[in-house]
Length: 531
Image 1 (cartoon, helix red, strand yellow):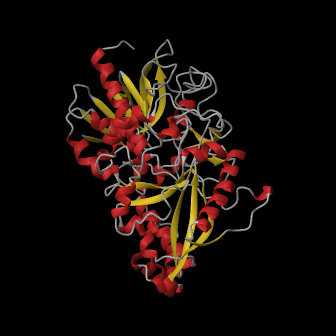
Image 2 (image 1 turned 90 degrees about the horizontal axis):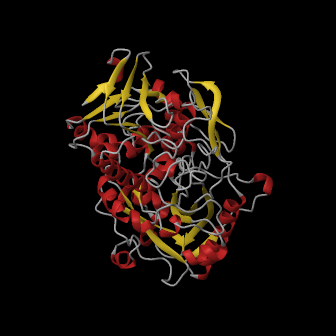
Image 3 (image 1 turned 45 degrees about the vertical axis):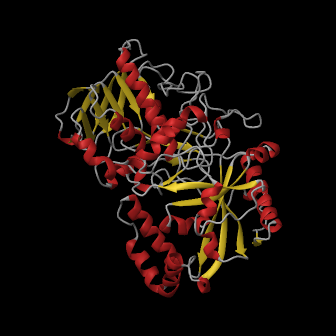
């Protein structure tokens, strides 16, 4: 059932077997796995069923490093950041899990093969058929209209497939199922305020919850899971510092370190020699609206190792007349806000821009939907990179406090010289490959100076790495089962546990790890382990 935490009498204590904080992809996936199980489950969500500005403001924080908006890049209501997810699904590659000699702090404590069965289940959780092991099947590409392979099969630059979930909003997709669960309780408008340990300090006794209305209650459980995202997970651990000054799980100063997002950069403009319809599946804009899949370009593991680079994925973005007009930018902002489930800000100014640039906006929309050649202006070549693990890129606590009185997050987001080298070399190899293959002309922007780095880079809103997984407590916050090393019954779920982040969208891997974690928790309940 769904319960509004604002209606619970102040000081109430609720008993449960499992308590999960955060009703996003990870939290909802774990809760669903316990639907109908013998254990009672509490799923705690800060927001309600719809966007609320007051609750969203709890995400505000300080950015010290590269410019980053801690508020607008997340969604704090039921469904979590699936409310602003584009739906793209693709497993990480085998190389992403391996320790790479040229990448410090790389390597997962589990392999791609170990996660593969969970990837197949995660595909169904995300509304897709099972995700197979051969995600870039060239035979399938050759037989698919509009998806002809654009490079020779022996080229070091290869094509890889991503699938798009048709119903990507987890809150809407699973609300009725969770509401009907006899052993499930979903608490809305309820914020984790404190994590209380027992006298030993090694076991969590209760989660203390507060609402913006002022009332508070506690949840006692046998197991606890933090599934609040890559910035909130470390923040909540750092805030739990009443008994441990550095926070929970932070004995080796690792909580909050290794923050990563996927940087994106335009590496050039491409004008093809072939018709644009043959590149439909490579055009991320077209594929998003018209296809259930898309293709992007990746370098082979051999090339990555030979050149000692991070991973990259490169895709095309069709550009049509009017696409870069101010009116079209305003329309994009409105659509983005609607996708996130919130009222558009600056609606009056945006509406004025759209009306003023009506001809350009009309041309851009017609081009986007119907792709007439007479409006086509070429493709932008955009590359997304896997940032190298960087311990100096981190989440800490700032001095400002939110409406609950808790210290806000402070983010120091940094990129490294290896990240820059990867972008520069990828740009060169893309240009060389396209020219060698006779695919058309590629124009690249002039190289920037060291002082300008990293101008022109955009982010993907993927918050990862801040409670990384490692079997060694001195190298990671959680172990291979995502349990906090120094706490017997506290687990972390979501992309904050990623040791390295690959180049693929993290949602499918988040769901796969959540399924694996749910299986492990079930085994612990069955074995009646003492905590």
